[in-house]
Amino acid sequence: MKEQDVCEVTCVDNEKTTQVTQQITNTNIVDVTKLFKALSDETRIKIAYALTLEDELCVCDVANIVGATTATASHHLRHLKGLGLAKYRKEGKLVYYSLDDDHVKQLIHIAIMHQKEVATRE
Image (cartoon, rainbow, N blue to C red):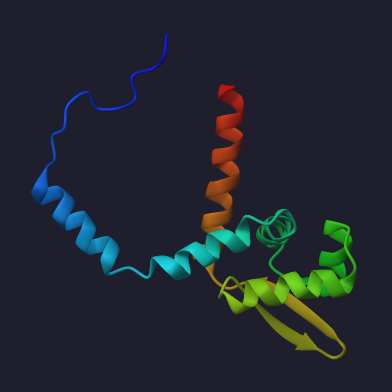
């Protein structure tokens, strides 16, 4: 038997839907979408997760961790930086990346914890 996951009657709470619609309209959904698109790439999420486990990593370390060339790792790191997810500092000839702030760390940790939780349900 199929699950009944659709309302059987139409009943709209106008006050609630108007309030939520206004909040969505006043939020830059396009930029939030870009953030999640960036993190939907397997290499970039590995990089972001690695940067939650270490405060900062040089590009060479990131490349080694994700099994990519330094050019590929650098490309992904620049993409994360461009979206405000990562930042870097240069020390001599080395470039070190870290996550931009604690919000990004929380986002990655919550996603990882949620995935583990869902996996235990299956």
